[in-house]
Image (cartoon, rainbow, N blue to C red; front, top):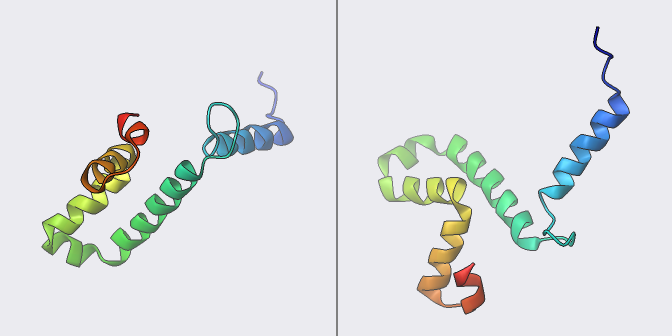
Length: 91
């Protein structure tokens, strides 16, 4: 028979996983991860509200899907197109 899960331990694990989503490997806060998550959330909202117009315009739909699916690739493309630090483009 399994022991019931400790709700406090489950909450701590959930919170740690959430915190890890915004931290760099060295443990500091990552603004890039934070803004990527916020951008993805706002694009999901936009996709929900403007679905019909996005289906009619394939280029707008492509941008929305690229930012949702591959935000790191989107950052590299923007860095290549508009310049930026070479270190950010090579990551």
